[in-house]
Each structure stands twice: as structure tokens, then as C-alpha cells.
Image (tube, rainbow, N blue to C red; front, top):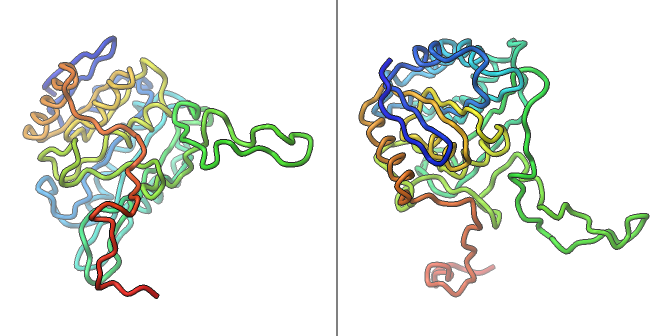
Length: 301
């Protein structure tokens, strides 16, 4: 296992190894990791996939799961970000495969099944276009870190008050904002678009997820100065999010091309010129923009 690069931002460090996931995890100290955030290959024919078989996804999960559990601290969290396996028009939800595999694991508890929706992606012609992926959040044991105040989003009605009862006249919502819930929808005024086309974070990696998605998990599920891990590091989105939130990071990938992308992004972050889309309100059309106007051939009913 070779250390490919190390980058420091303030008091935090990101270390990335050129290594297979299991070899990397086996070299971590037992019970040393606060949070694992990862997205393993879907085996749908991407350049880094070894097959197009959903059974190989299950085989990979079985191969790494014991080492992930071993690396986590008691109370540590594991987040799997996954989508669907699609072959010949037949869909297999990969979160169901993971949930089934971990169902009998007494060390892990499923806390949330988070649905992340987006408006852009491949267009299907013989089924409805896929517009969501899933994050399964597990904890090792009963107790765990959950910093809700760090990830609250604006209230829909921030000035709303109780209108009757003993709390009449008091604010009805938390002044710090509301719980974002388990559906992260870019149809809301706050949202997290997927990384496609002109997204400021887009690299050559074919399945890159947005930094804002990972930052929300890092803030909510790990302590400042804690260790975040991704054994399928890819373009280092988890590493970027970790450094931005003053966490340490360790990760690995077997593909040198992706590690070079990761190294470039991390160096840009250290130099202060990495483009990152914040978790900020998505532009809401007013109806006056040219692209927001109804085409004349649309019929109003």
C-alpha cells in the first residue's frame, strides 16, 4: 500500500493511498475511524467496473464490510451512497442489497435511509427517468454523533408563531432552522444538485458526487478533528468535504488516473482556488427569464 499524496489545510490532513479497498482498511487501526462515507462501484459498465452484474456488487460489499466495521469506533457512522443497477431495462435497487447484507449484522444499526433527488441525469425512454439516489446511514452500536444544529436549513415559515395554547405568541419553529429531513430535494429552495455538465466541481470522473452532499454528512455525523474515511476515494470529494470542515481524512483508490484528479483537487483546495458549490439556495425562476417562459406551442388548460 503506497501513500499517493498528503495535503494539509489548517490543522487537518488528507492522506490518499493507491490501494485496494480491503488492503487499505486492513491497515487502519481497529476502532480508529469516526465516519466512513463511500460509494462503491455499481457494476453498470463504467470504465472502472469489472463487470455489469449486480451480484458482483454484493460480492464487493461482502468483501469489505467486516473491515469497515472493524475500523469504526464504537458510536461511529457508516454512510453508503448508492443508486440503482440497471441492465437491459431491469432495475435493481442497490440500497436494498446493502440493507439485506447488513440486516443480520448485530454491530450496525440503520438510522436513516436518505433520499437525495436531482433534476438532471440520463433520460430513459422505456421507463421513468431515474432522479434519485440513496444514502444508508448506519451506526456501530447505540450511541452516535449527531450534530443536528450544524446542518439545519431555513424554516419554510420562519416568522410563524403558536396561535393558541400555553405557548401562544412564541416561535413555533427552531430559530436555528429546521431539520432537513430524510429527503434532500433540489425542488426546495435549498438543495444539492448532482455533478453534471456545467457544475463547477465537474472533473473527468464519471460518477462524482457533490461536495455539499458529503459536507452535510461530515458535519452531522463526525466531531471536529475526527477521522473520516473513504476506501473508494475516486476524485476525493469526501476528502475535500472533510478538510473544509476541519476533519482529517484517509482514503484509497486503485485507479491512478482518479488519484491524480484527487491530488489536483486537494492541492487546489490548499492553494485556496478550488471551486466548490456551497449548500445554498438553488435559483428559483421568476417567470421573466427567457428559459423560464412557457413555449408558445404549449396549450394552457
